[in-house]
Image (tube, rainbow, N blue to C red; front, side):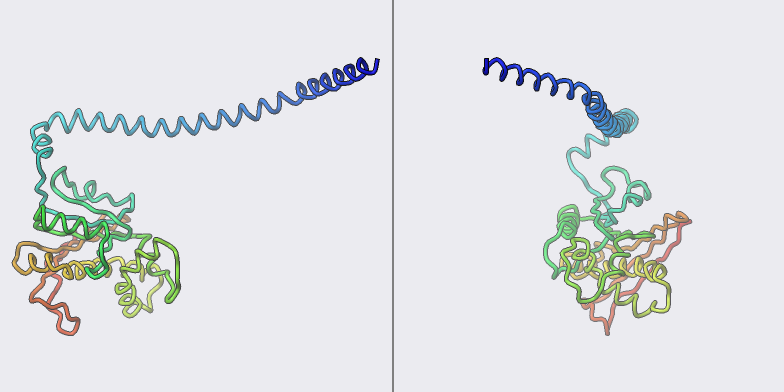
Length: 268
């Protein structure tokens, strides 16, 4: 009898739990359904992006690759670009799109704030690209391209002196510290935005000088086999400034500078 009552109690408890679960399940099911729909919607957005990328690639293959098949087959064998371009990683300033470089015409490396570290800083992806383009590809021109509204330069101008930081961004943009110091000296009376604009151009020139700290670049420039240029793209009004660094001699001593900026052009 005791066992029967116990079994009856268990049965009633189980039934109650089932009824409770059945009453709550629509809400729970709806919540799970909504989450699933949101997840599917997110996946569809990702799929849409890659579908668009797929169509762009197939369009490139049809209208560019196949229509210029011989050119691309030759590029598959070797490359001989005339330019090495150092540009910013900013998504708004793709140098090939802006300057119309075609495949095989420019060896490009992009980094935050289009900076060139000096030779003594040691290995980086930028100077590895420089070494390959200058010594192996024997490019005839190096073009450093900066741009307006550069977040990397803004980070450089915003950093505090003597502050230790684990930030990868700060550790990189500090390469441009001389451009920052120069800007703070000559443009201290300007607004912060104007100082950033000044530093955007000053950092390009400092990078041009840093290029000459690499022995194999300095040697080819001295022999007239390599030219160094700066460029500044203002995407607010779509203009482009271009200039060339003329270098004479074998020393970059600031007190006896043997370089100048020549052949300035303004494209608008």
